[in-house]
Length: 355
Ligand code: ADP
Ligand code: MG
Picture: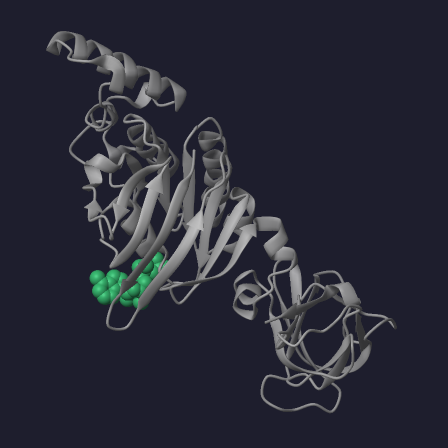
C-alpha cells in the first residue's frame, strides 16, 4: 500500500512543487509553517484542487496524471479527507453521519435494497462499537465533545474503506490538554488501519509523536524527507532545522577541515567532522549547551532570563558580541541556577551542519 505524489501547481504568489511517497504501514507527516502548502497538497490528493502537472497514485492506481489527462473526481479517488473541523453534518445523528458515507463492498455485486440496508446497518453498528460511539448513536454533532466528534468523523471516513487517510491539522482547534489526549487516541485509532495516513501539521511535537516519516515543506517545496527521528537528529537544511525547533542558526565560514566560524555569534566551532563546501549554516539546539568547561567553550553575557512553567529560556551572547543575530537561546530546567554561569560549551556532535 502506498501513496505516490509528484505535483506542481502555480498561483500568482505561491508555487507548490512537491514529491513524496509513503512507506507501507507508516504514518507520514507533512510539517511546515502556516502557508507552506500543506493543505493544498492534501486537496490535490483528494481531488479538490487540480495540479498544473504531475502524477498522483494510490496503490498503483492513478488518480491524477497530467500527461495522460487523468483527473479522477473526488468520489472516485477513494481517499478519506478529515477536515480541520471534522465537517460532520450538523442536522444528522452520529448514526446517520456514518451511514451516509457507507458504500457496499466492491465484491458485493448488485444488492436488493433490503439486503443493502441490512448490510449497512451492520457495518455502521460495527464502526460505532469500534470507536466507542454506540451509546452516542442518536446524538447530534453539537452534543459531542471534541474527542467524540473526531471519532465520529474517523468512523465516517472508515465507512467507505478509503485507501488513504488525509488528516488536515486535526487537533488545531483543541486546547493543550485535550490535544495531547486526542493525539494519543488518533495514534490508537489509526493503528489498525491498513491504508496510508498523511498527517498535515505545523507542530513539530505532533509530527514527532505520530509520524514515523516526515516531509518538511517550506514555501511549497520539500526541504527534508525521511524517517522522523533521523530528520530531527540531522535536519541537513537550515529551514528544516528551524522547523524542527532549532532556535540557534548562524551562517558559517569554514576555517579548517572540521572547524568553522559562526558569523552571527562570533565564535569558532569544531564540529568533530568534516565541514563541507555545501555547509553554509551551523545550528545548536537550545537544550544542547553545557554550562561547564569543555569542547567549543566560550564566555557569555546573559541578556535576559524568561521563566516558563517547566523551563527557563536564557537569552545570551558570546562575550563582547553585539551584532544583529548574535543572540543565542539556551533552555534549562526551571530549577537550574543560571545567573552565575559565565561560560558554555557545545559537544561537537551537538553542532548541526546545514546547507
Ligand atoms: P498551509 O496549509 O500550509 O497553511 P495552504 O496550502 O493553505 O498552506 O496555502 C499555501 C499558499 O497558497 C498560501 O500562501 C495561500 O495563500 C496560497 N493559496 C491557497 N489557495 C489559493 C488559491 N486558491 N489561489 C491563490 N493562492 C492560494
Ligand atoms: Mg492548512
